[in-house]
Each structure stands twice: as C-alpha cells, then as structure tokens.
Length: 244
Image (cartoon, rainbow, N blue to C red; front, side, top):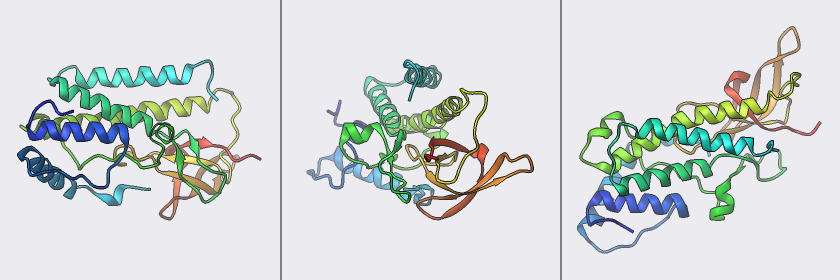
C-alpha cells in the first residue's frame, strides 16, 4: 500500500513488496504520474548499478538471540539521528527483513559443484532469488529530496555494519572448542568481501589448502560460481564442513 501519490511513496511500496515477496519480472500499470516518476527514478538508479560485483546446530537459542541483538544494535545506531516518515521507517524495516532472511544457512544440495545457499527466504518465499538493491547510493542521498534514496542508503549502511557483526558471530561459533581443525578440501565458506552488494553472499568450495611450516592452513584455493580464487583464511567464514 502506498501512503500517498508521490513518487517516493510509490517506490517505497514497490520495495516493501519485493522485500517480502521476492523480485518481480514485470510491473504493468497505467500512466499515473507517480508510477511514471517511479519508473524513471528506478531506471536511473539501476543504470549506475555495478553488476560485476554480484556473484550469483545452535546452542540453546544463543545464535538467533545474538542475531536479533546485533540487528537491533545496528538499527539503533543508524536511526538515532535520522528523521524518517512512518512510510520510510516501514520500508527500512522491510529492507532489513530481506537482508536477514537472505543470509546463508547451509547449501541446498550435496552436489560439490552446487554453491546455491539455503536461506530463510527459500522457505518464506519458496524461491531462491536474491533481493538486490535498486541501484547504488551514497551519503549525499541522506540529504536529497528523494526520500526513497535516503531509505536505500540506510539499508546499505545496515548491510555493511550488520554483516560485520554477523560474520564475527559465525567465526565465534567456529571457536567454541579450544582445538580447531584446519579448513579442509571440500568445505563450503563465505567469502568476506566488503564491496559485495546488499544481500549478496559469495560462497565458495575449498579446492586446495596451503599450510605453513607448522601445518596450519593460512590460505586456500577456492572455486566460486565465476572462477577460481586464492584467499587467506582470515577472509573466509566456514559455512559447512565436508564430512571426513
């Protein structure tokens, strides 16, 4: 539901729909000025989007409690000095909802070449489409007259700050025991990439490990959807261990 006939309100409504129902392929409408304006705004924003950046057991509730706490903390810090309308705030919450529900939980199959992650949205939306942002946004958008851009920039900020918290949480889960085995060939990892677009989680499978003189793995060779990479283990978060 749109709160008004303004272009900003129309874009807010579209983004809330996408965040909760998944990406759309076609939108049919009349030539209402707010819809025409929304089309122009979104086309302009999407034209600046860099597609080359895109790569297609918890303990007593502690994990999801930390998840909620980290999301709440980031939201509080972001919105503390921002003035948003009810509609803008609702859209921010929908964007955050989409980010949280797009996080990878595990892989969808046992196929060693399948790097499609299983996410909460697979269950909620019954599809695997990643809900990407409608363009690229900057700090200047906080002060623009186009309030929908302010909301999208806040969503980008939430993504950057929250992923840092979440990836740290994933690493903590891997360190519960004092003795930790090395990353092994066949393990599935999340690549830590600060430039990844919102809701994009690049996964990779370990092809080769490179230990140091003490036998500890320091870097690995990875297979991603787009090719072969080499990364230090400090830039990786283990998602799924290959049974050994």
